[in-house]
Length: 639
Ligand SMILES: C[S@@+](CC[C@H](N)C(=O)[O-])C[C@H]1O[C@@H](n2cnc3c(N)ncnc32)[C@H](O)[C@@H]1O
Image (cartoon, rainbow, N blue to C red; front, side, top):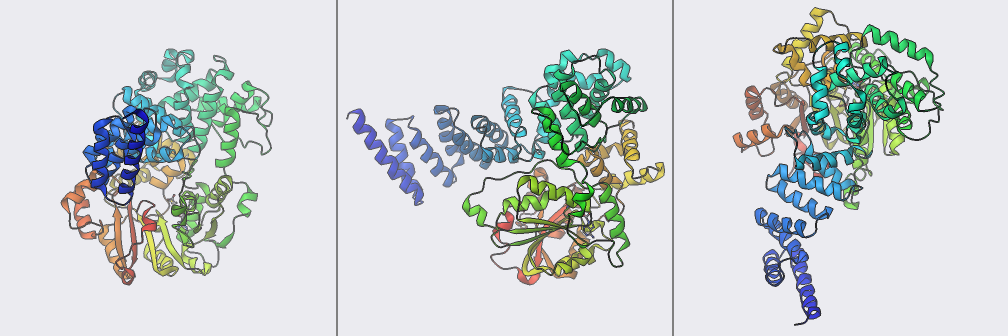
């Protein structure tokens, strides 16, 4: 047989294998592929169909072998890497799945689908040593952090661990871990660490993530101070990208880092020297950035800062700074807390979130949806009750572009933040309105889905708030609720008592002072547990965590009796920590939906941190549970 005849024969067999695969005749597809491979062991098409068929037959290990061979034969093909990564995660080989997915991201750096998959795999993953493999993961994280259309939060743990393993940062952490500023400054040489400080992996993480590790906070606090007090000792143009990234970081965490009186005095001097409306060259820009590292200096709206890092800083500033009066007035107000004999708790809560809109966020994943996925939410009405700064309603709006999303909240500042983000992202199917949950009926609408995450426990009577929301839920509607767990928050309760004893007030200065006091406690002091909460690392989140004006801590028995009282039933409780979820499933195999509140309560009694991310659960009216419920479309959002 000559080459051409052989090729034609193979093509015909492969077509036949594809047809079998598509029709679900998997064994036949496997047989044909194996026959082709017996003559041509490196025939990529045959290996691919073989892998796909074996995977569908549940023979994951064999499928992985075929997919690995494909990746070896065609290195650098993102789709093949993504297939292999999927198979590894099916087999529970999560580390391999992450690594191979990193190669998919690197091979096709513009592809948002691979990045979104990588983000899900890398979420909460921590690294303990550097290797060739972590280099690839680091490179892929760097690519994702440089893009806007992907949420940076899932990369946080991996980014911190990889960064703090880098030799320069190991040294910086050691140098800034003890001693006075002057002692630390004596050991510091900006030129020596310039590459590390200007590395895009570092800069893009600093721009888009909170530093949620005390070692990194100390490093950044030291650097900020050094660059302020020694501003004659370096070339401002060289370090402009670093100073702009640090300014964005400080804006995003609302100036949560500690500042000394000396720094504040120096900042005052610096402010007198510069004109923020005239950033003539890199040196001026560096000084403006330096000032923005310490306080919101109100960049003028019309500044045209040219290209580069300073422009990015100005754009970020416009997107995350406090809203102007004009922006506040533009928020539609349906039923504010102060209207018509308001509930006193609603008014106090509104006051807190006006001062500290929760949370300041930067980025949202803009998914690449298929037509089928887009249609999932067609015609659905979604209400996000207590939407804060709009991350959740806008996230729902981009995932369900054919649904209509309404977010309500008490805080105009929060709503204005979300509205600005919606405009920036070109989102048109979401509206954000000022409305107290207690008066939600004035909307006069019925919803398919109502979510209320981290909100009802801030109301005077959470059951009453929940009941009001229920009046707007369609007969067959779904609810997603998140509530504080008393068991998981025992360290928070302890900390709140200490705050009261020490007399810290919920002001920016006192929140900073409180944090410094906690960080200065002896290593074995249990109050330091609060540093393990990521909310500790930004001002509004820290206020929300331990200075909240009103909160209830709840239990699973309370949820069970409230669901009963309201005629609701739990469909699924989220256990976000994979180890707990796996153990729970093993211990309570009968609770396949993870919805049995008694078993969950029993489990939580032995594992009090299970619901550290709150009790997040789906529920619906008892009489609306049917065989098709809950409908799949909501679950695609990670129910
Ligand atoms: C901790 S934040 C949570 C925000 C958002 N759900 C999130 O998870 O990012 C609580 C939000 O609930 C809002 N809130 C509290 N009580 C409310 C009420 N009675 N009506 C409407 N919003 C309320 C607050 O203004 C605040 O923005």
